[in-house]
Every structure is written in structure tokens, then in C-alpha cells.
Image (cartoon, rainbow, N blue to C red; front, side):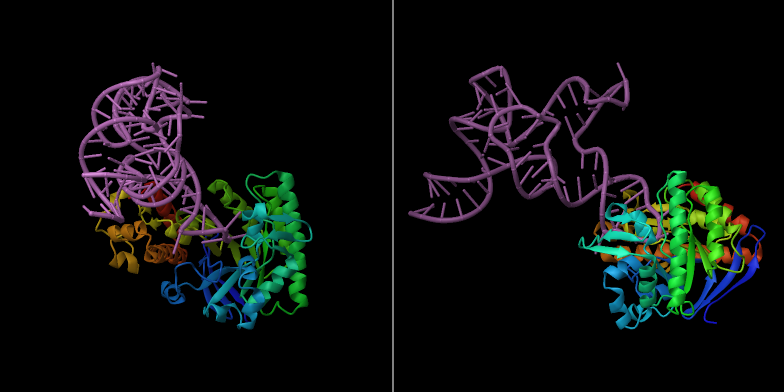
Length: 375
RNA sequence: GGACGGGUGGGUGAGUGGCUAAAACCAGCAGACUGUAAAUCUGCCGCUCCUUGCGGGCUACGGAGGUUCGAAUCCUCCCCCGUCCA
């Protein structure tokens, strides 16, 4: 079996230490997946990512379908070879673009009509098409097309989106099976339901009924309070089968990662470490450092005293600020490197904490540090 | 020496009588960023006062005068800068 998920240890909190085996390597869970939307984690080379210990990347169906085109990538030997990433890849379905490109699309039961953000051309993304594109890309894990909605949203709207997501999930599953893809790629169903517990439970049950090899919780972290994100997540994970991986999509802030894990989450992804890095926001053990702040102009110290990453070991805040202010490309590279290291380091510590039975302690320590504010 | 052109807030540079503390961009200061339309976006950006308000006062478009109810904008002289001619 090319895919294999095992839970090695379960914490009393519900946190799980696990291992997801894919044709392109093992993923130690709980795992954080850097976002490489357009087949690149902006600013990072694949070698750098490997050096950081990244085991799985997230890439995007919608973006790669538009450019360079999934067929081109197929002809070039698939996404792994195309982007020279021999490790695991999870592809998102384009469901998030239903949310983020709300002005450029129209959703119907059949699918989503997008007007390309690149050239205005029209494209119709159906659940089947999303599966087809992801098959062409050859990712290890593919996501079903879902309808991610905004927060706040009415119960009615959330119910409709969840129902549509369920229908799309069924179509996605069937399409993959009909094309013999189920043995090549793991397909995750996505639970929706907005901020409504009853809808979340219902959506979870429906996804379980469809019997996916893995499940995702989508439509969260779109503006709602963190406690609500946790509540919704808990509603879902309480019902999901223990032996299958759970992926909370699009989270989160560093200080919140352990909370999600404690609610039974195995996988997460987020643009925060990479995007914020490019915008000059560095995550540290003492809180956020906005490196462009004037107070760092002549600060010879490292970004984070207690960080062991290459950037913190070698460069000063003053230098990083200079690079940022001067609009140097290296600023994005170094900042991204640090932030990803920071995230992956937290995940490492989380896994250790589960192993040693002290996740609660680690979690509150994380929260406390961030509440203390910026250094 | 002469002829043109030009001197605007930290910079570039709009603005040719009131709607102008003065466009826009840059620089600077601060903030945001959660399955990436993001190396993006937002706010502030003369000084000052307070009852922080589409609030008051002061200063400001090379300098000094003047015209006008009102001038960065018109007039006079002066000082600088550029180009060209001697």
C-alpha cells in the first residue's frame, strides 16, 4: 500500500502523534505544510526547504491549472519532477479561491465559473475537473473541490455551502475511482458548515459516510475568533475516525498551532509564515518582530535569541532591516527561511510534547509568550 | 554682458487669483496579513494647542516689496540654477 497512516500515540487531550506514508516519503504528524501555491514556496529553493526538514508542500490546483497548465505539467513528468520536489505534495482543489476570489467567480451546483485573475479569461472548475487537474499534477494528496464561505455567514448560507460541498465530494470521489486514481492519490473530503456546530457535525458525518482516506476541516480561520475555530474543529474531530489523518486547512498563527493539535488535528498549512516574512513580519519565541521598525536600525542582535536557524545564527536585526528597507530580494529569502524554521520547530516541539506527555504545558507556554507582546 | 527657461513641503514634481497645508509618486513612520490576485494592502507624513474635531492658531511655494477683499499663482527689483549667444 502506497499510502499508510498510523497513529503512534494519542495524548489525553486528543492530540495524536502519527506518521503518514506516501509514495514520496513519510510525513511526521502533526505536520505543518508550507504553502507553495504556484509550485514554489516563494523565495525558497527546494534545497532550502529540505534543509528545513519540510516533508510536504501544498500546491494549488487553480493556479497551476491557469499557469503553466496541468497538461503541460503532466507532459513534463508531473508536479514532483516539474518543480524538483521529490517529497510529498498535497494539492488544494481551488475551493479556497471560491472564497478569496469571490469577486471573480460564480458558484452553481455544477461547479465554479472563474474569471482568471491573470487575464480575465473564463474557466469552469467542476469537482471532476479539480480531480482531473490534480491527477495530472500527480500530487500525493488531493483535495475535493469545496465551497469555502466567509465569516460571518448565515446558517442558511452555511447549510447550502455544506450541502453543495457534500455533493461535490461525492462526485469527486466517484470521478477519482472511475479513473483509477484512488490508488495513486489520497483524496481528502472537506468538512464545511461555517460557524455552526450542527452543520459541522452533519457535514462531518456526511464526509465520513463517503469514506475518504483522510478528512479536512475547511472554511475556518476566515476571520472568526480563535476559540470558535477550536470549537468547530472539536465538533468535527470528535466524530472523525481515529485511524485517518485530519487536516485543518489554512491555519494558523504560531501560538495557536498546539491548540489545533490538541483538538486532534494532524496536518495544517498556512501562508502566514511565508507571506508575513515577505512583508517584514518575523515570528519569534517572544512574539512578532516587524523588522522594518526603526528601533532595529542599529540592533546587532539576532531576530530571535533562542532560535537556531541559519538566519538567527548569522545575521543581525540591523542587517535584516536594511535588506527589507532596501527592497532586497534576500530579505524575502532570509525572512521566509526564519519563519518556516520557526513553524517547523514548533511542530517538532509539539510532536515531542505529545511523545513526552506535556502538550498542555507546551501549548500554554506558547500562548503566554505571544501574549507578552513583541520583544 | 545679452536672450530664453527655471527656482514649490526630506526628494522628484503637479498646480497660473479663492474649492491649497498645496495633486501624484518616492523616501520616512506605524499597522495589517490564517487552504497566497500579496516582495501586498492600510493609515500617518509643516509646526503647535486643545474640549481630538471634516477643530483652533502659526508658518510655508528662492528673497524683498507691491497689486487685490483674497497671491505659490499677477507686477517690480534682487539672488541663485540651466541652456544658448557674445
